[in-house]
Image (tube, rainbow, N blue to C red; front, side, top):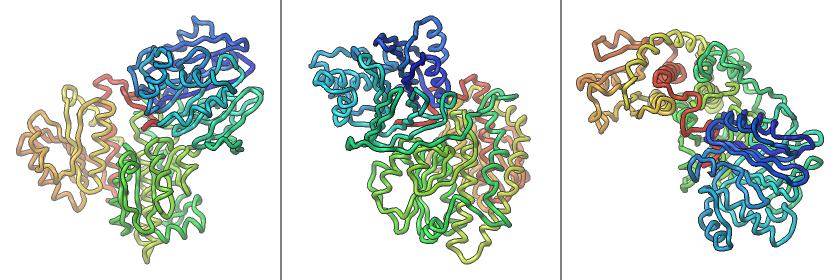
Length: 609
Ligand code: GLU
C-alpha cells in the first residue's frame, strides 16, 4: 500500500525514482507522482492517475532535472484518486510524500485555513506541507521545524519532506509506516521497501518507530522520538529481487498457484530429520519458553487470519493446546484478557501489515510469555520486532491475492503444532505423524493441480453469477472462508463462507437454482454431517460444486458437479483443499476479465490501518 522513495544525490535522480516506483507497484496504488529539485532550488513536480507507466511516459516529455527528489505511489484514503490528490503535496517551498493517515487533519486544515492557507487537494496529507511551511516562519532548520510539528500530528505516517530552499537534504519521519534508509556512495536514499533500491545499493538502515532522519548526499543523522541522536545499525541485504517473469503463465497468480509444490519443499526442507521436527531458528532459550506455553493467541488479517483459524483446530486437536485467533484490527482496539503463559503469534506475508504490527506492539505490554511471528520477508518490521520467528520460504509473491504464502504459512504452522505437541506431551507420536504427512504434501498438491482443466471448464458456469456460497466443516470452514475471499478479491463476485452447520440458521434462504454452492468435503469424520447439509441445499435446487476425495459418497445429478481430489492424510486436507479453490477463483476472474494480479481497490502490503 502506498510506496515512498526519496533520494539525495549528486546526479540526476528522476530515473532512479521512477524505477523505484515501478518496483513499489506491487503494494497497490491508484496514482503516482514525483518532484525533483536541483541545487539552485529549481523544482519540477509531475503527477498522474493510474499506473506508474503513465508517469514514466509523462516524464519523457517533461524536464525533470535535479539531484534531490521524492516520489510516491498513492493508495487513496482521503480524497478520490485524482491528479490533484496525488503526492507530493506542496506549500510554497515545502513538498511532502506520505504513507498513512493524519487522523486530526480536519482540525489542522481549519486552523491552517484561518491562517490564510489555500488547500488544493482533498487529502489529509496536504496539512503537513502547510504546517511545516507555517512553522518554518518561526525559524530553525528544516529538521527542527519538522520536530516541532510532529506532536501536532495524530495517526500513522511514514513521510518524507523536501524544502526547495535547502535542496541538499530530505527529512524522513517514521511513525507507524515503514521507512528504510538506503546508503550509497555520495548519495543516500529513503524508501518504503529496500527491494526498490537494489539497483543502487545493498546497504540499509531500518528506521525505528518515532525516528526522524536527516538525509543528505554526504551524511545521515537519526534522532529518536525524544530527539536524541541515535545510531541504528546498517545491514547488508544479500537478497536478490527476482519474482521471475511469468514464463508460460498468463498471470503471477497462476504462476504462484503452480509454484506451491516447490515453495513447500523449500519451506519444509531442513525442518525435519528422522520424522522429527528440527528448527534451526530456535535455541535452548526458545525451547524452554515453548515448554512453558499453556495457551496460544494468534493475531492476523485477511488470508493470514484464515491460516490462523486452521491452526487453531490443529493446536487444540493435535497438540491439546488451547488457542484463540483474532483479527488484528479488532484485537488492537479492545481490552482482552491474557491467559496464563500465553504465546502471542502473528502471521503476515509482508511483515508490514499495519494492524498486525500494532497488535504485536500492544501485546508487549499485556503480559504475554513471548511473541513469535510467521512471515515471508526476513527484513520486515514484524520479524525484527518479534522475540522469535519462523520464515515461510514462499519467495516473492506478486499477485495481490495471496496463494503460496497461505499454504506455506499452513505448513510452518503445522510444523509448530508438531513441535509443541511433543514438547508438551509425553510422546512424539503426533510429531511423527505430522512430519510423515508433510513429506508427501508437495506431491499431493501436484496431483490436485492436474484438475486444472476440469476446474477451468466449471468456471464458465460462473460467468453471469453475482453471488456464491462456500461451505465447510471443521478445519475446512476456514478453507471455505479463504476460498470465498479469493473469489471476492479477484472476480468481484460476492461470496460468503459458512460453517455448513450454520446453513439452516439463515443462509438456506438464499438457495435457489441460481445460487452456486461450493463445498469442501474431504473424507473425514465430519463428512456424514456435511452430506446432510449438502442434501439440504440439493433439496432446494442449489447448484452444488463439491470438492471431495470421497466420490462414491455423492451421486451425480444435473445440479451437482463433483471435483475429484486425491486421497491424502487428514492432517493435510486444509493445505491441499485450498488449491482447487484458488484455481477456481483464478479461472472465474480470468473469464470475467478483471485485473487479477492487481484487483481494484486492493493492495498487497496493507501498511495503513
Ligand atoms: N492518506 C494519504 C492520501 O490519501 C496517503 C495515502 C497513502 O498511504 O497512499 O493521500
